[in-house]
Image 1 (spheres, rainbow, N blue to C red):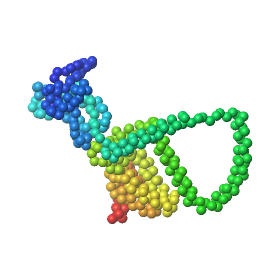
Image 2 (spheres, one colour):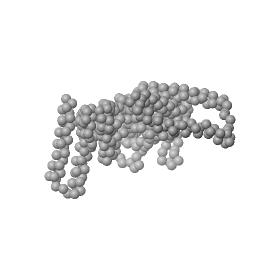
Image 3 (spheres, one colour):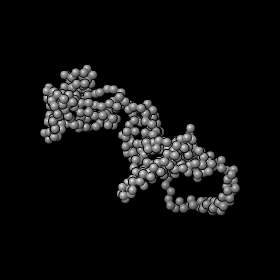
Image 4 (cartoon, rainbow, N blue to C red):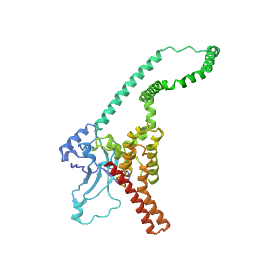
Length: 396
């Protein structure tokens, strides 16, 4: 796509740059002329539209060439479009350099201080993934229904007559029937507690049913509340910045927009989990703590391991698959098998990755003999390899 600009239209107040406009009459591409004509209706002839599937654009590089009548002055720059955030306007100042053909023809590229630049405003647009678009549409429909119900309830409550105000003198009279009832309840409380304690085995199913109903009611009420205008406002203030930060991340962009293949659970976890030495250690200890928490409920807690085993394996793959590729097999086996949760798989992965590094740093700072360093490193590596090989053999 070739665009002719003609002479500059204006000079910046700092006298270090110029503004050019697109000359659509001399543009070489029919699609460009159509796009520019499209934009003329908005009184904006400085917009160029590159139309292609988002996943193709996202994986491509934008190449810009500034062509002069004298080709030795030609300039070019390149920008990977994956650096942009989808649906966000971005001003960029790109450094220009002489083209490779110009350098080959006229010799070495001359040093320029400062280098010439081009200032452009880019916006990468594209659709949501189908499942995300369906979720957004459902959410908008649900919020619309809740808003209508809320407006109807408010108008109905405004029509309800208010209760008459009760003076302090009459309020005291209301306490007369309450005091005997409270005295009877207090006196009967030990009897009620004793009867309930004796009937616990028989009432347990009903208690579980009541707790389930209460939990369902609370969760449903919470969902309805956060769907109201006030609830959405409070939720946006609390979680809005966190969600926006996640959406502009690489994993968020890949998950929300159709920028290419869908991200895997491992790739998403790698964007979230820490990479530092000590932050990885605390995360590994927390993973092992959650895995061994099934001991709090003997026998019954082993059912929790059936759901936690895949999640723990994904977390360990995201953290330690590069340094300990066999550790995921050990993690899955010790978590899925009964009474083996005591094995700290995540902490073992941390040790395999960082103990040799910390040991080498310690030796360099304290001038320990290289033979001792090599023997300890080999011992730790051999023990880790034996443990992971056994775990992999069990899976086969």
